Length: 170
Image (cartoon, rainbow, N blue to C red; front, side, top):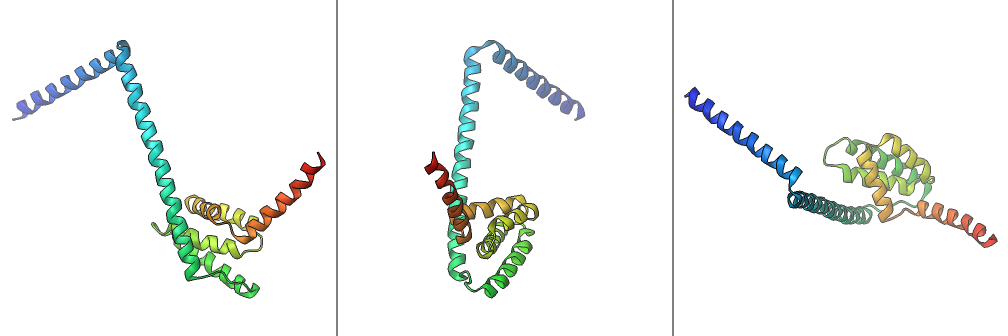
């Protein structure tokens, strides 16, 4: 039994080594073989890139849908006292959920809602960047790109207004 197993193993090893030698020889000496390998590699890279873009598009759509649903279910508060309490509750929930696997999107939505009511969004984004897991922070930034909070829009508007006079002077 072990003799049959040994012969089978030796035959498979010899066949594998033979194929490796054939592949290496063809790769080095056959131009058409090299071109085919490059085409296959290029097709695989293009396919992976297309799938990555499709996944990103799906992720953005899912984030947008969940964000809109969350904002409809629990709208952002308007008074200062409510905003403070809302901010603390959202960040706390976001921190708890960011540690759970599979709850990253919900955690990002809570962090986004905290950002939306915080009066200084650049400060809180810096804090998020240091304390929140990187994949959750990336989702928060995607949510901010999908639907920028009013405080972020105000800052962007102020910076755009400060650039305009420099352009007019030239």
